[in-house]
Length: 214
Ligand code: HEC
Ligand code: HEC
Image (cartoon, rainbow, N blue to C red; front, side, top):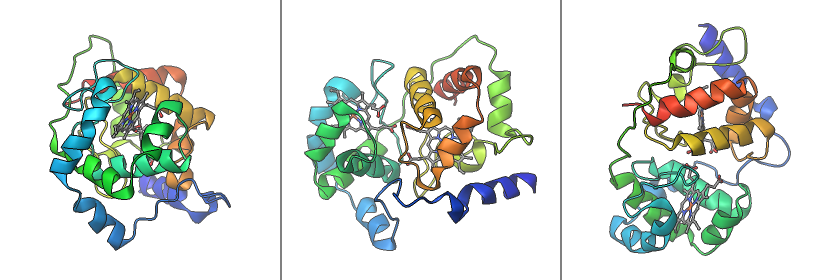
């Protein structure tokens, strides 16, 4: 019940500011458009992504996120946000500006069709992060991560990304950016509100935990 209240706080329209976080609006037509992305065309287009994101969407370096197995809606939204300048990254802004909406949907379909990264193991004690994933923190505005990202970090429909198997270095970097507000393309500020409640140590642990999640 308490978590339900917290979730309500997070999705309240009071968080919507004049400047929208994203130009993405999930209308039924948009959902259909992304669902019908062409995997074969996406595979061809993805040749130009391989140098950074890996041939099968699994990147070899921590600073480059893996894309394999990611939910298509999320990948599509990120590509449009980079193209619109709603999410800032010099490398990705120029890549995405060269992609049409159709290209973005095709790429999103291709990456969703690939098996996600093999989970690496860590011998660190990640029990505190596990509590945040399972229970959140009732003393703060911190609902458990699983309510949105799923119990095994697989993501969900609409715009919720999968996190399982993701490069820890990237996850930490992006959570720190939400926390500072330099990443601000999350609709309703959901991830900015959540990251501000997390300490840097918790963020590091969460990155490790999701990287090794099965
Ligand atoms: C020169 C290297 C480079 C190339 C080429 C590149 N990317 Fe990226 N990509 C990055 C980096 C670095 C990030 C992380 C940027 C950030 O933190 O915002 C990223 C982030 C992304 C994200 C966001 C992932 C997430 O989990 O939020 C998507 C989606 C993406 N790239 C898709 C693509 C696609 C599709 C292509 C090919 C058409 C491509 N990228 C080509 C470097 C590259
Ligand atoms: C209220 C739902 C909700 C909750 C709870 C939530 N998230 Fe998220 N998360 C989202 C949404 C929606 C996005 C995509 C935002 C966007 O479009 O940029 C996201 C994005 C992310 C990303 C970026 C993924 C990427 O590939 O760049 C990370 C990392 C993340 N969440 C971690 C967490 C962690 C850790 C927790 C728990 C402490 C958590 N989230 C709790 C909804 C939620």
